[in-house]
Length: 82
View 1 (cartoon, rainbow, N blue to C red):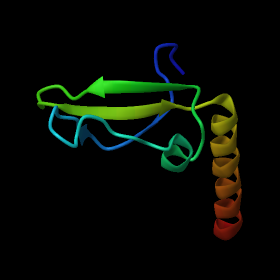
View 2: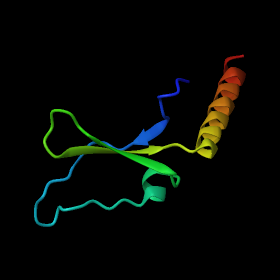
View 3: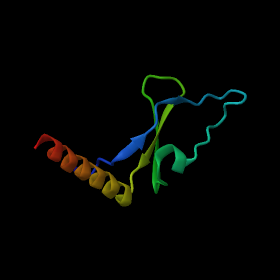
View 4: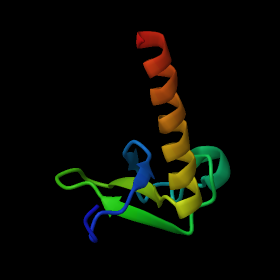
């Protein structure tokens, strides 16, 4: 994996406009992403006014869990196909 690419889970773009009742957005990171990230990334959506994307950088523990699930799924598929 390249050094400048971070494995992330991202939410769909959301609007954060300076308007009464919409001055901020609250997310429970554990419920939203399924884990508590060490780092989050907030990106402005290019070409869209007041649109942002929230991404959680995956921890090594989460990456290991996903790799284990993928390995188990491949083994299961191999058993079905053989």
